[in-house]
Length: 554
Image (cartoon, rainbow, N blue to C red; front, side, top):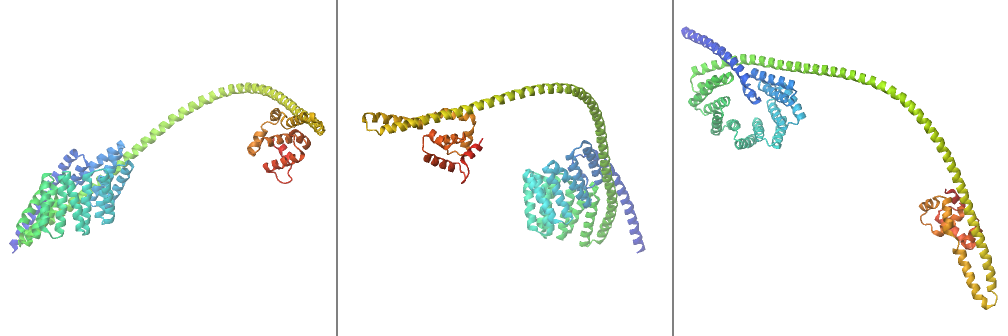
């Protein structure tokens, strides 16, 4: 019994030494491989693949790109770097940091209106919210990403989001919806001949069928995924799928087949140096051997899995330390570059400001000197101009006075002419009235031979009294004396007639009713009626003086 324990201890010690040697060799190979990879990998897609085993190398590459982006002020490249850092943080389980980097990328993409980049970033934020168990928020981001990819006709992006949405529904236990979205994604990937995308969807479908206990369907999809991963040379994908196929055989009690596939997955993981998958496959092998009754092998692989997990924690700890150190260095470097650029901008602005101030001072001195000279010249010219203007003003004033005097004289003459003309008309009408009255008396005489000629003369005198007044000449003279009077009056009272205008003109020159009746050839009664109608047209109140109102209109 003691010999058996000693043998086991010796075996365990040898295994520990062997694993230490393997781990050291693996670490050295990993280091040199990461240096080689750092020199060759450039695209962000390749950086994400690299991060599966070498997150510290991946963050170093991103750091290089980010420094260049800040130095070149390339906003789009900055956004891509920040999004990739967010994804790397998610991959390392640092969700709070990931969200911060995603949101920084979102602000840049929104500023640039980079729709496809926004869609990709929103899809990544949706995946982050699945890990945070914020499923409703994840759906909102997936829907935003899906609409964006559709508007940009990005079919591969659309399929990627549909696959993520299917995965989300699987997490929630809504398997019908999960199938719908996964099959939509599969159809698009086939249309686009995206083999890697197809493989991922088949892997997702296999996982759904496995959850439902439909192991035959699950195996079919896992096998399709394995073939497609092999076609695209995605060895990491192959390891996971082959291990899942081994799980299907174990769950259906096909232990030899399960062991064969799980060992294949282990060898592939060992070749790639994927300690995580090595630990996972050895754990599955331990379970399978235990179920098949091979307890020694079960113990061996359980112990091996335990050691690999310990090594994994050690490697992960070192990687996390290196990852955060690289992340800190990147942020520090970015801040230094930003500060340096800010200082350069400040120095450039100060230098430019100093030059501008000196130029402005020189220009100001020249301008002040020139303005002083111009001011003196201007004052002299202004003085001369004012003198000339004063002389011109005096001449203009004299001319104005002369014109006013002349206008007054003309107006006086016109008024005299109008008065004289009116008086002549009145005398003429008075004479004609007297002559008409005498003729009317003669007409009453019985001498028939004179009666008809005298009646004709009376009629002609009547016509001369009513129509013979030289109204055209009179009105023309009136307009010259009272300029624009009738024009203003017509604007105020547009329904005034020619007869109204004649009566208004005679009232305006302040004639009495007797003279007005004589000039118009009407009786006093007729004149009173005419004045009454005119008052109505002018809308005068009872008791308001007609002549006074007309005189008030200038």
